[in-house]
Length: 515
Image 1: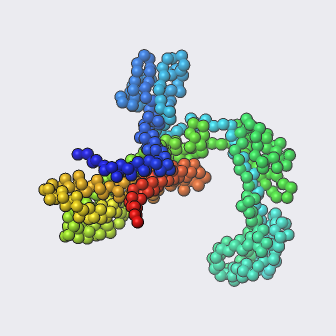
Image 2: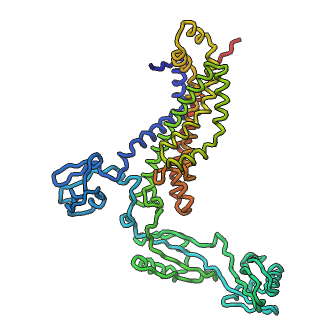
Image 3: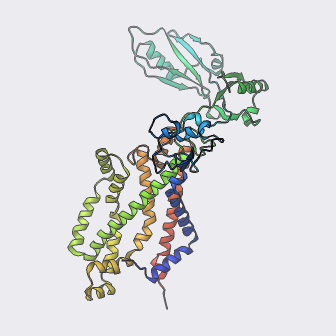
């Protein structure tokens, strides 16, 4: 049977198309979903087709062992990236070639560090050297400044504040005392005392550590400098001329051998050091030419992970919402149509059922059966239908007393036909208007569970997993920016669609008042 929409419902869909923001959002979300479904065609670590020594192979649909190419008797799948790099097998003069997807990596492929082509970039940083010294205080009150303490003495390090003197007194009395750090009233430095435990005899002197306090604004600068380019950051040009000259020499030397930090004194008599380090590949790694969105902690391409994660998230959301809508519609419709004791008993059962904590159930079942896409979908579906069942129950309660329903009953039509043919088409407004918002909840919940470690199996592409890695590696901004941007885009488009459907299906727009 086909559900035929009434002219009024078709008019509401036509009204939705006229809402420009909602319709454009629908088209964009549909495009994102279709593109994500083609992930295997866009990004894959296995070639579509190989032409080798006059033979054609399709490694995605047939088993092509390594022995076919290297004649070494190994029957396992070869590394096609390494094979293509061999000039004797796939050079320009051999006539052999491979046809790849636009992106030559799968979600499980780890990019070897040596395959990442880096420009001649050097990590260059200049930072202010923190002044550190000490001050020996004897039990008689005499003080002996340590090496490099002249600056601290000028700042008033010899004038000990009262909390510090009390802490010193406890140590001289051979009493236990916790560690203590006291900041000078000027904020330029601080005194530090380590923790003290009683000994057989009290100390004759106590060592105070003096540390300069360096503001965050003066902590230092950092940049990547290409030796092949003449461009330099602004702070580089503000260095003393002799430091710049020596820095240029160190830039050339650092390409081949490690160089020591260059210490110097600036115009404000601050001690600073210039560090130059050749960039190395350490995962997670920043975006580069062949990997525009960077690499994650395992060396996997973030662009590929986001593409596949989008497909998994949207498929999970659509399947979950559809299953929830079907279950909620059936149970809510039965409650609303029959009413009475059926409705009363079903409502009490649903109230008890809804009190089961979803997260605990998910953790328990995951520990017993293991984490999987199907298990996560099943557990979500058996809990997610309750909300829509309330709306469908209300719709069927309202429609079962309508004249067209009474007429269908009087004609002797079976209950199933009445519910499917007459009641369901007239109660689709909650399903249609709540679908985008339910999709937002499903996608967001999946990302949250993956972020917490209770979602999809380890290694499965996921926005939440990338965000979790970004929290671990705070410098890896690309692990936070791109998954968040994709999640935000999908949620925003779904909300716009939901608002458009709610506006188009608003029954108040069809009410006309006549005098």
